[in-house]
Image (cartoon, rainbow, N blue to C red; front, side, top):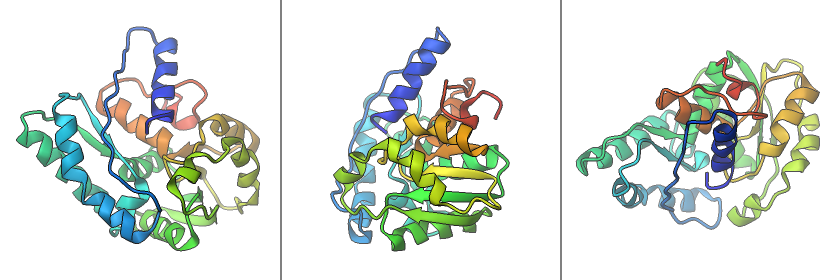
Length: 234
């Protein structure tokens, strides 16, 4: 959220002069990607939303994806509504998007009915993500867990590794690849490479969140070299 989203929007500023983006952030604490700490992270939502309300943002985006998905199918709607209520209560109404809801929206925008997914999570949490996506109506034909439990270690993963990891997926029936189902796992530098190599549309939690931000702001959904979802046609 704090690295790849700004990179994409800065690249968009260069490609489409006239748009300017300013970023404000508030953090919800979490060290280990476990169900217990994910629940504790979610409990900090109101505090983080109050801090952002003071900046009077035009839009608010929230992560992490698995913290929301771990609360059960469809929980992104409740999470977005909670933040919306806080903003409204502070006289700072703004659209709210979540990385969890954005990923589902991005899959839908691509017209994909079947996807293959890579996550940095341990296998039980990856299964949670798979079930969440499938509950929303998209079949997950294959998934790969990189099994990195430490949140900071996830952020230190080499995104170039994804240029090889995707080849471990069975893409026989896939319509698209979710190259990173986690905004914490770096992936942007691999998106266009994997899309070109696989011949399939590639999206990530980060590119999907950027897509939703641009769409909610009424802007053209185009970012250079960020995959089919952000080529301006979706």
